[in-house]
Figure 1 (tube, helix red, strand yellow):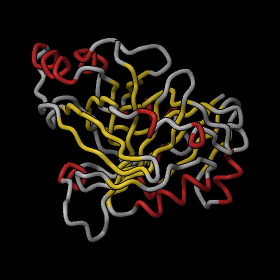
Figure 2 (cartoon, helix red, strand yellow):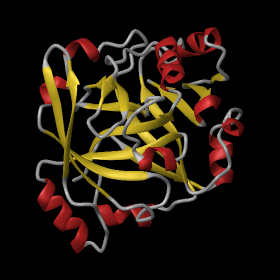
Figure 3 (cartoon, helix red, strand yellow):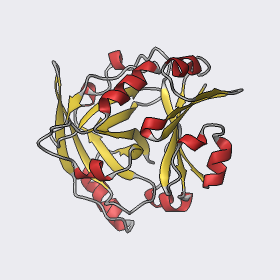
Length: 257
């Protein structure tokens, strides 16, 4: 079964602003990392019931290496990444399923003072599945990513529960296989999305297909609205959830218990 490794928010050259917004919402971010591929990132690490995270990825303003996939990808929620143990087997399985993927690629980023976090990824080539980038990640040094000091969030967040898509169907993603319990993909028409995420859906640009919203679990879901107001973000606290729009990053966050 497919196990979530992380979701990605593409910040392009605006990572400083993204870092500030997520900290204002009460998340703990890992120190900024710099990949050997040329990108930079912060991770919001969770661990209930399994290790996973939300990655804010971007590019340095004056970087020597530019990751073309980040420049060409939409701003905001953009990546869906599954955990793997055998990159070669994953590459072969995708090929057998009729999907095109890049061969396994290994890269790293320093995590001072502990060492270098290393990863091997297999990426679906663009256009294989609608909505955003899909790839698979093997953690060669998980102890440098899933550290206890980065799991405790002042806003109580402890898990990513859903990724909401518009303009895509479950049938297309079923080619990847079944998802492990605890995380799900939710598929909407745009009208369904607008109804479900009223009154803030208008802050998400109407382009399809796309990744549009992310659901985060926290017992402090109600208090998130206060943090959002203080940060100047559009928010709506409802009977069992709080919605927060990130207009600068074309993404909607849903907080539930």
